[in-house]
Image (tube, rainbow, N blue to C red):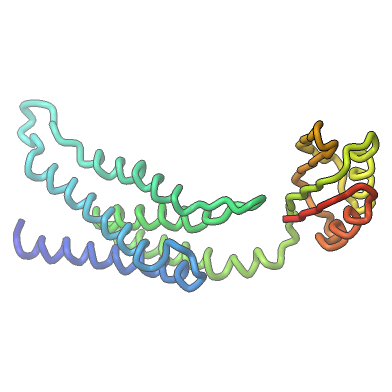
Length: 227
């Protein structure tokens, strides 16, 4: 590998680091665990994998036409796509009834793609993808805030095990504009108590406080939790 080629490969690595770092900077500002350094390193490592794959092909590929080419330059890049899935899965966190980290996982996936694109010399395409990704993260987030979206909450109720307990709980839900609830019910035969847990889509006009107050007023209810 000559000096000119060394400089070209170095520029590819630097550009991959810069573009991946730009996306990571947005995640860092919003307090995500996978931030500036993580995205930079993912993009840098992907670029190096791609450059190494191309160099393997240049050094060991059979270009004489006397036989099949023994080196596939796309194999290492393909493994990057598979491998980044494990890092992305680690960024996804489930918190009660919600899931966080999907956008960060997608950003890591894009950062890996940027590294591969820079590794093969698709600089213009990599820059365009970075701009689109940043526009998505910065501008479309404002659009999302204006959208009306469904809100899901997890409700847990503890009370005395009476015949009409569950029906009265469902009645309170209906009064709050909540219907068709799939519940998980647990009974304690020895203590004659019952536990009901269900995930609901909260009505647009209601609130968790209204639901909590309605369930708390039920006769026989010992404890209520809305998450």
